[in-house]
Every structure is written in C-alpha cells, then in structure tokens.
Length: 284
Image 1 (cartoon, helix red, strand yellow):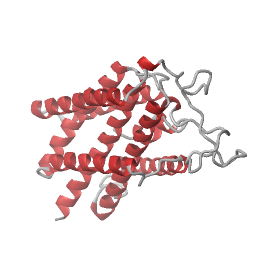
Image 2 (cartoon, rainbow, N blue to C red; image 1 turned 90 degrees about the horizontal axis):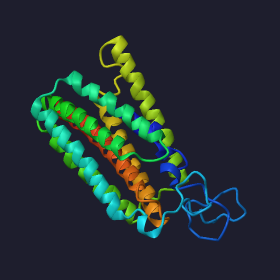
Image 3 (cartoon, helix red, strand yellow; image 1 turned 180 degrees about the vertical axis):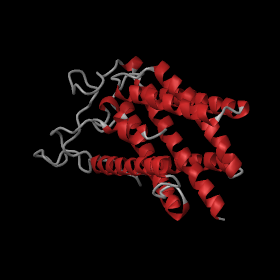
Image 4 (tube, rainbow, N blue to C red; image 1 turned 45 degrees about the horizontal axis):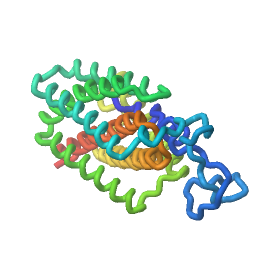
C-alpha cells in the first residue's frame, strides 16, 4: 500500500531526490552549516551545488534561468497531483467500488510509485497515473473506515492539513533542522517501522487474528502516533529538497518530483491518521 514511501523512494538516495542535498565538499567556510563534511579539513565546508554545470554527476545539470524550478511550479504541480487524488477518491466513494478493487488499485499505485522512485527523471504521466490509482484506493478504504468509525475520513483530512501546516511552520522557523543526521535517523526509523508492519501483516494473514497486535488496541495507537511522526519527518525532508532545488537552480521538471514526494508523504499521514482515529473511536 504505502510502504514504498519511506524505504524505496529516491529521497533516501543521495540525501534527496535525484541529487538534492548532495554530500558536501570541502570549501568555503560557512558556520552553522548542518551539511558540513565531518571528514573534510574544514568542519564547516559549504555543500557543492548539485545543479552547477560540471558539478556532481548524481544531480541535474543547472538549468538556464528561464527553465529553472520555482516555488510556483512546485505549488501548481502539487495541486494537480493532489487534485487527481481527491477526484479519484471521490469517484471511488460515490461509485461504491468493492474493497478488492480498491486494494488492486493500491498495488498498481505502489508499482507506479516504485518505478518513478527509481527513474532518473520524473515522468509526469507516471506521477499522474500514480495519483489516480492512489486516489481510488483512498476512496475505497476511506468509505470502509467510515462504516466502522463515522466521520473518521473527515477527521483524518483535517488532521493531515494540521500536520502539514505545523511541519511547514516548524521548518520555516528552523525548529526542525533537516541535516544528514536527520536523514539517517528517519531512514532507519522508517525501515524498522515498515518491517514491523510487514511482519504484523504476515502473522495476521497466516496466523489469523490481529497478528502481532501492532495495529490494534493500545499498541496500535502507539504505532499510529509513530507513523504520523514519521510522515511529518517525510514532509520536512520534502521541504528541504524543494528549498534546495529552488536555491540551486534545478530544472523545472524537478517540480514534478517534488509534487510526487509531497503527495506520497501526505497520503502516508492521512492513512496513519485514519487508522488512529478509528482506534481512538472504538476505544471510547
């Protein structure tokens, strides 16, 4: 379903999307730089521009000024991608698609997400197709949860918006500092979280019941909160990648990858909140 987000996304390769946040190089002193290379002679070495001509091979070449990514590009692409998710989810809800079809759409979305994550360049068609299938799954699963806990989808939507705004404010005010240590910690935590969820699912599938209990009762609430916190960390990493892309002159096509990353993070948060609201409602 959404396990592709923290483990397989290119955000965890080269510290970002296709060269965003590239490893630092020794150079001009920049006190307070969170990306200082601990193995360089200068502990405050300035990171190399991953988009400069002739620079690091892991990133995009720096684009001409008229074709560089802007914040408006990111906002417009993200609006299109999320809009497709919402429209597809609404259609799936209204048409009362069966649960089996919804989970089939989730598998397709996961495959499309994995393909895009490993591509060197963003593919708008692939990203938009991912958004449609992800939306179909969300519509089906949201309607199913609504029958168990009335109003849970709307509460999860409002919670997702609150998390997004909260992380954005915390990032802009530098309460959250996205450095290499942050990336390493979130990566390790995400891998551990996903492995536990997979183990829980396998035990539930072959052993019956609720598996290891990571998604039910008090333990399920704890893991739900952890999942939301991980989603918030993904958002902070997305914001850092976008900031670096705009600052260093990434080409305009990189805005599609930014939209893709934000959509994945927001869907992750929504699903975790949906489960969390359902558990809290049933425990009342």
